[in-house]
Amino acid sequence: MMRLIYGIGSKIAPPEQHRIDCTAADFPGCRDLTAYWQALRGSQIAPARSAFDPRGVERTLNMTFIAERVAASVLRIRVAGSHLDALLGMDVRGMPVTAFFEAPARDQFARLCKPVFDEPASACLDLVSPGGLARPELRARMLLLPMIDGFGEMTRLVGCLETIGREGRLPRRFAIQRSQVTQLSGTWPRADAAAFAKPRYDQPATPAMTFGDTAQPAFRSARVQRNATRQVRQLRLVVDNAV
Image 1 (tube, rainbow, N blue to C red):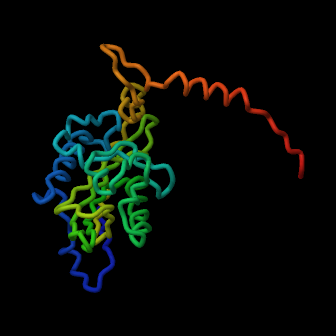
Image 2: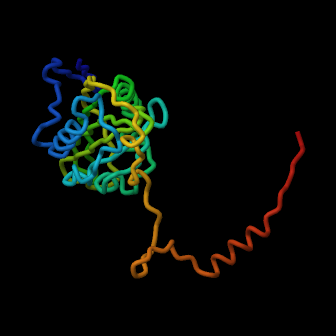
């Protein structure tokens, strides 16, 4: 079953003209990620997060992200490619996916995310960032593909945010022109501890300095360590019994 949800516009073409081809040649990153995700899931309704190998989408890693559902309509970015950082001019890890959208489009995006996990479904969005001073119009496509976490729950997704054009002045945020949500079918995989082991690359690495062959924690001077110890010793417990 396929369901189409459209953005707001004064002129809306018939539904058949609003079908989005997620394998289109003008968005090769979305096409490659879709093919890899389909190969991972096979006859299952969605692949396991632990099965996702970044080497499988090496050519599109800079525009790929992995997000976690932390509330009914809230997706938080856990891992993101460098292109996503470049669009906002900052590190986007830990930020909600709605950070890439203009304020009026954020509620619309939240509504689109719900069926991705609940039905489940895949979603394909055509986006545009309006032009302005030192900021050319920027076309984009966002792909949302669900995955299953280590507990056998549908709480992860792999996505792609691919743009056409120059970024110009940052940050760039988008409006939703049209969207397509496609319900998925298939068998639900069994929650096997080995198959759904939590992957190491979900967690950002701790900053480290390497000396020879040994990785050491980030350097802290003796003065910083003494100051930290002094502050701990100066702490006092204060009890306020006032109502």
